[in-house]
Image (cartoon, helix red, strand yellow):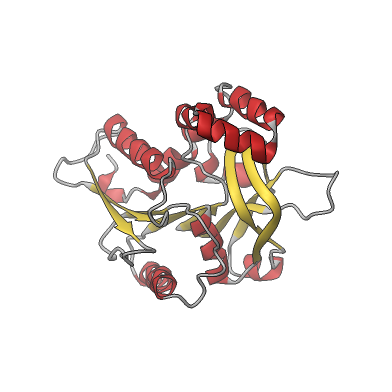
Length: 277
């Protein structure tokens, strides 16, 4: 796959980390640059700090990726930055409904929860306890045929780190709108809680994942092996959880398999036609 060197792929990366140190932004940047290099495509990547500086990208980009982030996806209701963020989603929906060239969006974790609130098709609430670790994610229906999941197994494994969840999807509203729930979290028969939604295709051009498809095993291992983080994880989740995570991060069929498929698949599917050979 090659492209005219004068035609860069323009990607907007919306940063919702609110200044908090994280691995997510680094991983997203690296995947984007790897994609450009491997496909011989010049990439123009621009970042927007959404929650502090209230930066929102214009409609001039080809692809949009909206990151995870800390804190509550509920308490921001009515805030100035969230109103601007929701206006941006609405503007993209309007653009895609009236233009032949479409703009694709990937919502990750915190952004996914916000998008679920925007569309109003499910409940976003606080979990009983923090989800933290490497977990299996299960497809629903024929979701493994969705372009973003091409090459993945059922279940596939992801990094999950969240205090909030998306549950109680209003299925009639979702399917009437043409949207589709693609994946749900692992079964937990020992606890009386509903399985949370892990991925939704909101429409042909907008998709969201509750998990972190950008997470890479080396970064997570470095995070877990630092004395401070090791102590934090063991204090909060126990030594068995810490050992299990380290072991699973070293399994090439788990996190790195997801890393090499989901976000690259999204970019390939979202790339405008004029950049394809």
